[in-house]
Length: 240
Length: 222
Image (cartoon, each protein chain N blue to C red):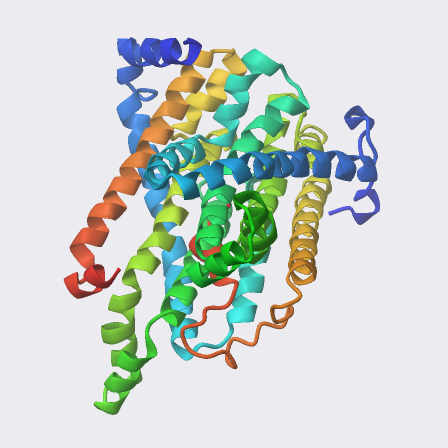
């Protein structure tokens, strides 16, 4: 591997390394944000109407099983070879991960807490925004972590539909110019971005939930039966 | 509906049902890749998850490993592995295993940790060995969650095994990759439908496995 040329990005990509990073983050994170904005009302609907949840889970599971590449290719017909074609499937995948996370989070709010809020005169909207949502933050962030990391990883596949994969485009150039170091650059940079985004979400969780024990989850010191927060993403794991 | 027409056209064309590029051949290849990847990932993930979960240690290390595994881009890993090792089965298995180990590992660990302590203490008090406690007390109780982890890993593998076609192997991804380059969307949609159908079949299989393997007492309490 030629390390001198590690950051020497071929000019056909029209971006330098930092440009590709910015592009990659935009293509990965906007869909997560969009997924969150769609998932919040949908999840609230599923909490309100219990019969709706199982069919929603079924539909999301089927959507999730569609390979990202096929999703991209089918969308080319409608949105062309653009960033949007990459971002729509990523939004759907984020939605699929986030809906169960939010529903479980909101449902886990104890009945007494809700009753107390009602007794204090909170209306349904205020109760949702000021009580249910903050208590559900750990579960929501757990879902966001899975969605964000898998989104950052999946953007690279966009390379196959005409260089829409940001850092993934390096994989193509690595092959046509026979420069394996570009492929390593793509994989390592993307992995580091994912780890950093994951860490940022953990910090956000700590900031948003000051009443909870901090980043040091002392699993051993907790009483039995209280599962650490990390259980939530694991059980709802859906990254790919 | 555009997509429905594509699906119809794809499946009613009898040419798609025969030969080396026929649906039965490609489906069988896809099943082989998926099963191989899932078995290898389970061989790595299950023992480590079971043992660390039993002793309740190493949870932080496991979640670090899982985060790192998830962070590695599957597609990029495929290209890097192919460039480094040449064409073949191994470069496809590496990304699929990296994809599947984190959910298996973390879910198994959490499943073992979530087992109610009193039965475990009782088993220890009755003089059962640690291996007996692990395999005959904790494992049966944790089984539904462990199967859930395997299931989510299996679905990810089924849907991602399509990338094998990018490095000139077979499987259902052939239809998607070939369709992309031939601008034959009928093929792409047909391939995607088959993959989604296979994922649903996987869900069904795991449901059947959980009915067959989970002890009735555990099922009732869930």
